[in-house]
Amino acid sequence: MLSKAILSVLLAALLSGLGSIVLAQDQTGRTYSREDFIKVEGGSLQEKLDRAIKQFKDSKQGDSLWIAYHFQARDGVSIGPFSGMIYRDEDGIRLTHRDNPDGAAVFFLMDVSGAKPVFARVKTLNLNEPYLFEDRPIYWLGTLETAQSLAQLESIMRADPENKGIVRGVLRAISAHNSPRVVPLLKEIALKDSSYDIQRSAIANLARVPAKESLDALDELFNNLGSTSLKQEIIRAYAQTGDRIAEKRVLDRLTAIAKSEEKREVRAEAVRRLASFRGDAVVDRLFDIYDRSNDRDLKLEIIRHLSPREGRDDRVLPKLISLAKRDADPEMQREAVRRLASTSGDEHLGALIEIYDSAASDPVKEEIISRLARSQNRKALDKLLTIAKEDPSPKLRQLAVRRLSANRGFTLQ
Image: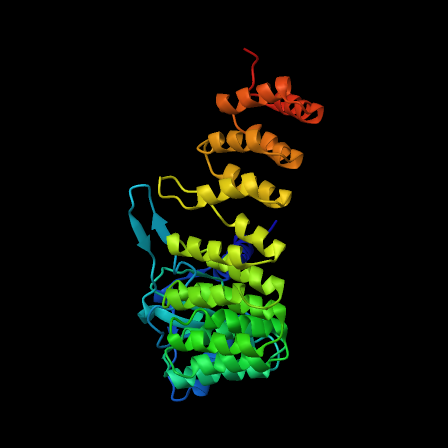
């Protein structure tokens, strides 16, 4: 039998081991907030980076850490993931979440498991938000001058240009800086980089810069890049930028592209982005492009983005009804019918029934039957029943019967 002394030693050792296990678990599962940031002193940025890494290695807390610093961000730029989010309710109350540039910070995830530290990730966050960081401590370098920060970010990108994740993170961080160097740098990368993904990212980040210079750069890129997909990316960037700083200029540019001799995919992208804006003036632009174009596919693209609104002054509804009734191309008529039927509720049932009664094309009538069958409104079901009983076309009568039989809301009265 073991003596009490030996038992005491074993028990102490066991408790000590359990304590170590608990401590290890606490370390790996710890959550850090801004109050837990570890301040690092030093002269140059490189000296601060070296000190942060040494302090972390000496603490023996793992193989990776965050190193972060504050930089001067441009007013109006999106920093965190919540920037630009809009609250809107049925009473007309709206709130757009804007970032305070005072909270802008760049975060480097450093991997120190090898012989040389490696930049594994670059993130831009707004520290006015209550972020929590799991498992890894954060070493805080304070506030960096804008030129110093941009030089560091560009150095990271140039050192590992094949790492697309790193490059995208760097470009996003660069675009948030308040510096006249930002737009020329992003433009140069978009023009000259050998990687399509990086060019695309540079264009997208130009759109995040709320300044006239970013639109000037996008104009230059559009005129000098031959890639169709990159031109489409520029058009998307136009729309994002124009929503904030120069709406009329962007609308004029998108309209001009839609009317140009650019490839169909490029013109269609311009139509889609033009249609993302709101207002009667935008509807008028789309109608003008439609009336001037001889491109069937582009016309169909325009119809797909026309949405009727409630109210007597709606300009879209009469246009769609006119197209559905009178266009010489059945596919144009069918697309107009789809748009009429796409709105919520049953506001346009009367228009669909009127179009059916005047249509000469069976494909158009088939489209209307399919759309009527999706409604539970008694007016729609009664029209289907009339078609099933009285339409001269056996094919249309049969289609109406099938649609009625599949409609749970239909009961014979």
